[in-house]
Length: 294
Image (cartoon, rainbow, N blue to C red; front, side, top):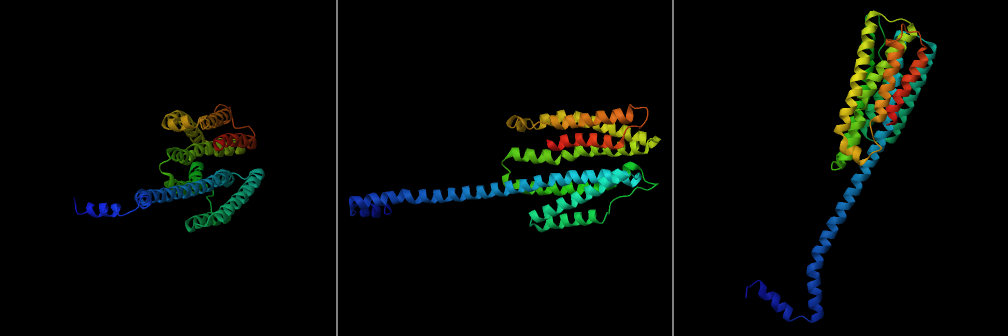
């Protein structure tokens, strides 16, 4: 008999039946207890990861209103920098106050030092009115791009923030799809913002110069390209849309279509920019809202 096995037989021969039973049970119980403990630890870690992801996505969702307000502030600021208008100036002040209020809410919601630093810097920039101002030497689209930098910094911060949170759920491809769709929204709102800004400006001043004609035509073409892009996005995110049929890009496409139609009707097809600027601004804002409601 093998020297290692011999002591085992000796022990078993000298034990009573109840003791033998307890010994055999212990042999199986110890590894089972070990695996049970490992399983419990795994479930606990997954629960913690799910909690972090949920809280992170909730924080990212809270940034949506701020992004929308910053885009509104950008458009109003560009228009006012070129053409003073009491009604638009009043809206600008309200938008600035709303943006600062939303930043303060986000500051109270996070304890991360990097987030706090970014939000405080953004608040200081808006409070100090350190945004682009129109000059005779600068074109309207150049002023728009200057103000767009603030919005882009917000989009970049939110993208980094969202991908940090979903790193805890890298196996959930649907969460990744949601974040990707969210971070791609600025592609649509940027061109629609140009339509809102340029259209309102030219309707306010009641004339379009030769460069303005080029700017408006370029904006219209960009909106058309984005509408065509929607169909490609449907194919790219098909697995996600199959899993969540209610999450379709139809509202984004509808917003772009309605915005382009109003833009074309008031500024390209019309014999002159004679419509009410505020009514046009509000109509394009409704198209904006369709994208955000998605």
